[in-house]
Length: 365
Image (cartoon, rainbow, N blue to C red; front, side, top):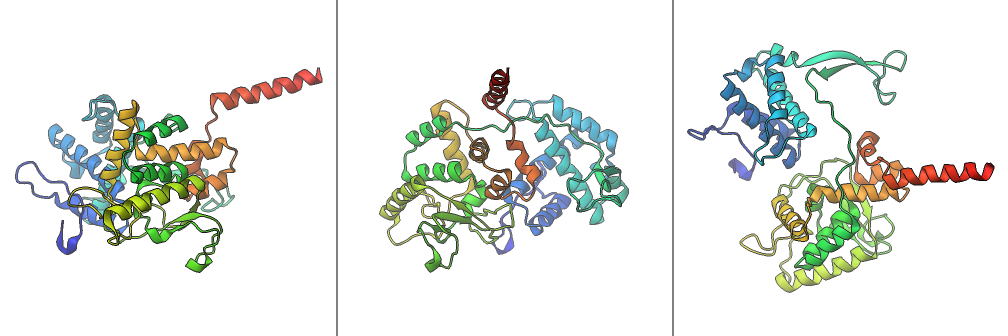
């Protein structure tokens, strides 16, 4: 914790635990840009890995070049992570992105020669996804592309089945945990968004105009707040609401009763609070939720993480025939490209499509 109660992460040396000065400045820059705590953590973890590798290889990170980063990329692809598992291409790509952003920050702040950062990008003509930013003929535009990239093999996101979620709910020890799973599974919010929800954001009346809300039907709001006690931060700057069904309302009532029996009138403004220890009654953190979800999954015999619920919700909406723009709005995606990862056709839907055409041809014959 730093002056003024501000908490963040730092990279320190393993001798005297002195903070890495340039990495500290990088953190401040990310915080100023309102990057989410999870993004800051991921970038610093990747950056620490790069700095350790450079030190072990005798590479001066201040003068790193494409050849050095190519060696580092190969190291990431060939060497297992700390857990002993091979790194995915997405993880390798994130690591290289973090290093690139760090070097660009150092160049802009005068810590390294600008030519070091400039060597990491190349100018190309690219076809834009939309008309904005297009070239003279609306077809191509000039863009700066990372010179070192990872070709990702696009795969459907990892999801949880309804049966798996039901099994986890059956293992949940409290109404709070069951309601937490309900929110994640039915609404698909990011974990930072979930932990930032306050009780005032939950509107379960058929008409909420008395609360100053014009949205019809039961729903809850996702708001971006930068002053959350638990450090939660919604990734999207756009406020949105998520409709809820009767099961959500029933679980919410059970949780509110349980919570009142524990804390009485001493209630936090946050929707999800800790039940045990010195932090009892205070808003839950990401680590609290991660432990609950992974433990419930492990007890049921499968892997589960909070973000898998978001993938599950989005996949279910798409497979139910929802329009892409609706799914995009529910997820809070700024671009349809982010939603497109959920458009993978399942084996069942592909077989159904072929069977439908075959049956049509049979009738014509």
